[in-house]
Image 1 (cartoon, rainbow, N blue to C red):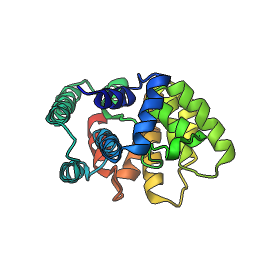
Image 2 (image 1 turned 60 degrees about the horizontal axis):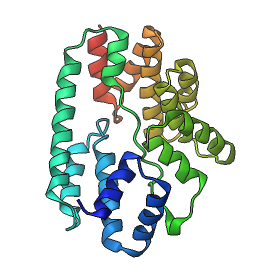
Image 3 (image 1 turned 180 degrees about the horizontal axis):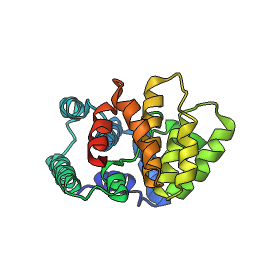
Length: 238
């Protein structure tokens, strides 16, 4: 593995040191092929999380066509292994008993970052970059603290979607419910559907089965991104 490949791997895993980060940023600024590879792998990483997206398979096909020439066969083998792992995980979830804790774990997938691309312009940092970096590293408490700070200075309502996901990861179900409820009347239909889906899961995890069913029935009756998942979860709850 070459040094640039090592830097990319450490960056994606969140194990990169401060010295390595400086080398990484230098390559991002002056090496177009390196930057293309990083952007491509970040996109793949995001796509692998798109279990809540009906366009998941189509997206992978598009990415394969867009792959930079520097992408290695090893990397695509890794993607294949990840997909197989997701499929096996899905089969295992299907066999779980229909208890609320199991159902929550079976259907909950962390909301991927779809609002702020994780790129750094000319090495400049800002709060938005830092918060989503912590989020993608799955440092939930740090991300939550940073999202609170970001919310104080930003009117963007999507912030509550990520705050709620951090709270779910930390087991703060009552707080998560409040965060997702803030999106319930959003005029952004996609954001509303996402907020309602995670609100239903938070209610389920918190033991409020009747409320979870009510929210899922609403999603199932609509043509949003989570309609099919809502129907499947309702079937397993009966």
